[in-house]
Image (cartoon, rainbow, N blue to C red; front, side, top):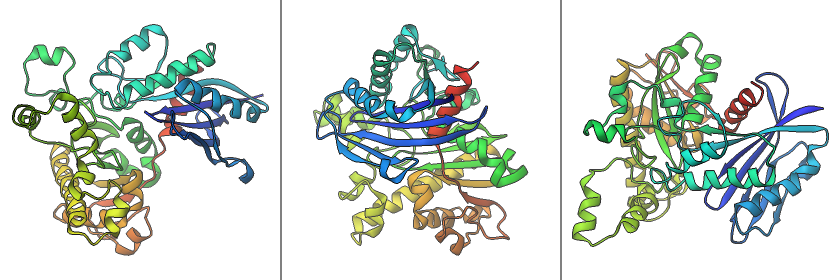
Length: 392
């Protein structure tokens, strides 16, 4: 009987999943991928990848919470295992805090530790943990492995991790953690396949999607990144503001009588590309629009990505390669072109035809530094990490 791994990513109203068959120590074959969406509403189970086309479905399911979503998923999935032995479930957990620089098997003590991080990331952490609890209840004997988005950055230099705040504040856990680490870990792992020896040089990876960040890598390790204490900081994002003057929330509360919840909603859900454009948080819609507000939103996004590339190039002492990944990074050729044009001072020259074809190499042959489009695969990294821990 072959072994299998279940990968889960629980959000506020969705449960993304993938099932992998274990084919070797680090080889995994995707069997199914899908989502239970609109939990608590007009819920549906959608399977977008399967061995047979007729197994890809889009069907209503009655789920009111994450427990019911897990039950609906397992009811559909159990008959599909057919000769596969499920050995563990790997969960995406956004925040691991200062204590977790590697995946961990979840028990009651670990859950309590992770629960204490909810105030740092109320947007993701509660829902990630809800998915773990739901599966623990449904399959109490199945090992649950938490894989952290912060772990990849835990060994950044102390200078990159500290805010200019008193030591007792830092000791309480207020520091720059960085996120998107599962995506960056995948890119770091495959970089030699694309860049050869340059992979261990000075590389900036641009994870550009609805959430967006940059990571400076040297020897495929995180040196610095744009997100910090929470995933709200850094670049302009779909609905998140990115870096702003920290006095702005104080001003909004003092002068506009906004309470904490209203300020949080503004900065997390009504800002970014959506706030700038007044139209959409979707880069595809903004690129298709001729409204000046849409153009402003795109240019703001490009400007701050390019600005971040400049800052991280300083942290690295130069730059050898730039990598684009995630939804915008992998698919929005006009955005890549504008970013590369602003990075021309670094010696980057774009191959327009290669960029239009989405790479993988999109820099001109004579460019001083290379630019790439490399698809990320966070689910596969979670599968690798869960397998390594479950079979240790």
